Length: 306
Image 1 (cartoon, rainbow, N blue to C red):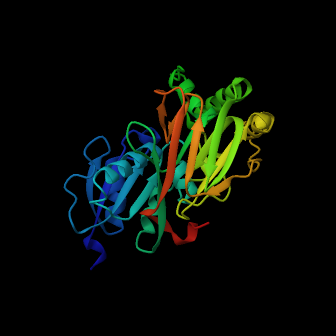
Image 2: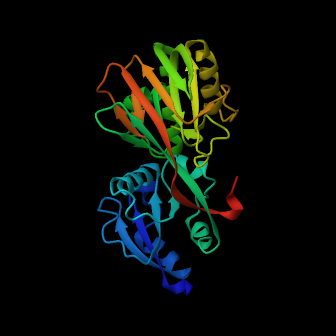
Image 3: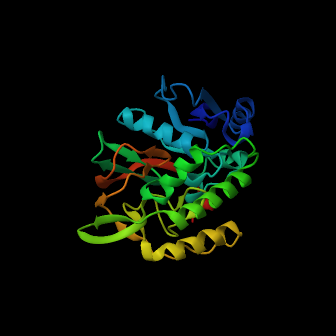
């Protein structure tokens, strides 16, 4: 098949990255590299009418757009499964960054003819009203509290991603200082840990929130979660880590994650997030979390692999 015959479904969040890349510009770059574009805005039914000859699905936007598309794929039982190409230009871009994918759209498209496929796991959580799925992380304590705080904060004066990160880190520091420790029981592949915690995160990728790299070696395709547990006794460590990040000192996260495939967690508190979605409908949780190994395939540039 000739390069010019290659068809790509482009799902575009026109508001991501403050509208840095327009539909016209992205489609033009794709055409210059020999790709036909089946374009749809991310606020439409992005997987409707995908033609059988579609080579892969390109997602232009941030983490939220990527998650929305993947959840749509899962809801259709992967009927339209194709390798996924990421064109990241959101605020944090935690998913693309964890995969080593560059933010330069033109550069990314130029590599689509010479790429590697990287497997990508999906997390499944049982114990809520219905099964929930995540591609970034699921967690309790500090980060869902941060999401709630930022949702209730007036951000009309925030003009740049840098200012957004500064605000998020400042609010996170306040939360770390005051968040009450919660009784937590977590069983990781049969080994149980009981302690009072301010945070428990089941990570599928290496980064969380305002681009904090909580698990240095997390691989979203290795078949394991990286479980990060921050106990009451670790509050000062967590505080100093965030202070360093806010000051531009990107030091390794001081708490070693625990690898695991099957996780049961009891959290006697109400703060839970699943990716960027906040859950506040329970006072305590009992979840069983498992990994759906290599459910997705993501296109990565051979030169950018970690």
